[in-house]
Image (cartoon, rainbow over all chains, first blue to last red; front, top):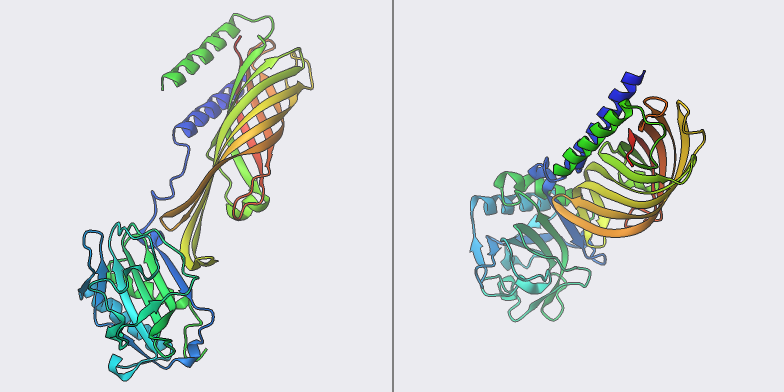
Length: 213
Length: 206
């Protein structure tokens, strides 16, 4: 009995000491890239997604980086995949793709944001800068973007990808509303093989984004 | 490391002293325990998993045969990973794997009462700990952390037994159950409630 007690105490004290030295479970230690990623979607509550029929998507992806003042357009394998996946998802939701010259109801901009982009503004920030598609590209020369106030500010200090869907149908004074937005953050958001699942996830959590619903 | 070595030396010394047969226990004692804690209430909603990563240590002084006062501290790490889900947030809808963690370091003053004389083979006792706890809240959204470190009041009643390794032995086996309550509020946690089981050793050193 006494010996058992001694043993128990010794073991308990030992375990306690061990737990002092390795006291906390590190959430990042066993995290996969998939688990590290978050997909944020936001939308304009007043937008009627059934009212749109056609959309047009940019033909390349803008890359914003800290090391360069101006945005660069790119069309890598990743970018092609991104354009294809978003286009497919939009069609699946009942929208028809048209050329931007055919006055689409919805426009889609695609953006990749590189490490440590200094601007902390989610806000028009990167839009309209040199190298970006300006409103004129979308047929509204001299126009601008309007971001509803529900878009909150994010600290941008890693690789991200953003999809912005805006209303060209109800442009007011050459300004158009961003009606839906998806932002991907985390490890591997710039990997081509992850594009499709990330697009799927973003649309899946945005059931309202549909011609028929 | 050096500290641990010192403690081991103290333990060894105490055990040796006991062999020489002490007449009664010195009033000052130290205890070290391994802790397991189960979250309850809103803490359980935040992290459901029983924590096996914890310890408790204290110092207490016998005012007489029954009554003691002391201080204690410890550590407990709560952790649970929730599979990917979509959380409506003020920033929009966020799809994420959440890793919810909370690290708690209590710092309490204690008052203890032994229900039997010091000469008993088994000494049941009760302790009330009152003080504060450092709460380190870290909720990971994917690899992005939302964290807050704060102090909050904490009260912890405890009942347990001490089993001396001999009639006058200064070394005792200790086992106890403790309830921890703190009016801690942050995000999904509206108060902190845990039941904690401790097992370890108590040594009268001086």
